[in-house]
Amino acid sequence: MSAEMHAHGAALAADSHGHHASGVLQHQFDSLEQQRDASTLGMWAFVAQEAMFFGGLFTAYIVYRFLYPDAYHIGSHQLNVVLGGINTAVLISSSLTMALAVWSAQTGRRRQLTAWLTTTLLLGFAFLVIKYFEYREKFAHHLVPGLHFSLPAAGAEEGHVQLFFSLYFAMTGMHAIHMIIGAGILMVYIPMAARGKFTPEYSHPVELFGLYWHFVDIVWIFLFPLLYLLGRY
Amino acid sequence: MPRLHLDKPGDYPLAHHVIPVRTYLAVFTALIVLTGLTVFVAFHHLGDPWNDVVAITIALTKATLVVLFFMHVKYSTAMVRLCVISAIFFLLMLFGITWSDYWARKVPAIRVQQTTYDVR
Image (cartoon, rainbow over all chains, first blue to last red; front, side, top):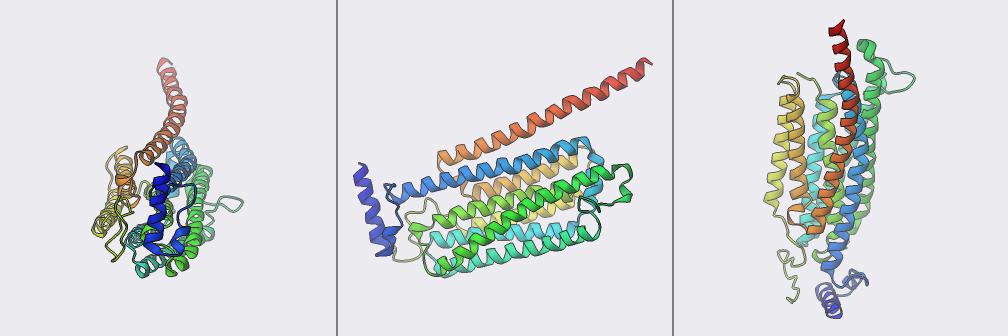
């Protein structure tokens, strides 16, 4: 049974793409189908682990928000809702272009795949550039936790507002690092896609990267209302 | 077992389930609309817990759409679903148990204080 399935997988690889597709099926798998399922599950285990990692930051957010709700409102009002909102739209758009990249890979559209991956990368850069201007504004206004933190308007809550900003920088900073890592992987993938490395039978590297990119999008979907939109009424 | 033919872009027998572009566009539209909604609601006072309840509900809805369609979980294997569900379960354990601990220390302390004042 196993040998038969292996033969089937090898036949698929050889059939579909001649010479270099034989390198697509790793020897420990019986078939491309099995290889795809195994790697997808592995990626999901990693994404679940990432969710627990960000979960620690969200737990800190929940605890201190419960203890110092007023300081969170004061801190949130210092953030730029317009830039945060634009960045949310940019990130959701990049998730769409990533999904379209996966679709292009699955349906064997090489040029479209390259174009969508490139668009995703550019949107990722746009997000980081906007984030840079937001951070620069915080440095200029002495809202970075540390020696120069100053928000006299907060009165007695100033220390707790500083705590809010520690969480703001930890959460958005860790999110931005994930974006930078994602951009790095895209810069490796785009030339591979242009060379025709990804085919319908070997689309899962693109699919697995998509899982990572969408996960980073989900983190921001929670960060935006929890950090930027408190007590705006 | 069917043989593999890749004559035209529409042939993709090895992909589990190729989600059509119109589904992606519909999900994208919903995500943008929900983002607008969460901003709109944030600028209207709904009474104490309700702004948070609405914001979290919208964020959870958006995350669910991304997981089901962009991340293909709607068409995934049982093992992948188990992985997703266990991650959500343990996150809720982390949030719930930690929060309830802080709540149990803070709120009863306030009540004891109030009772003491009443007696005085």
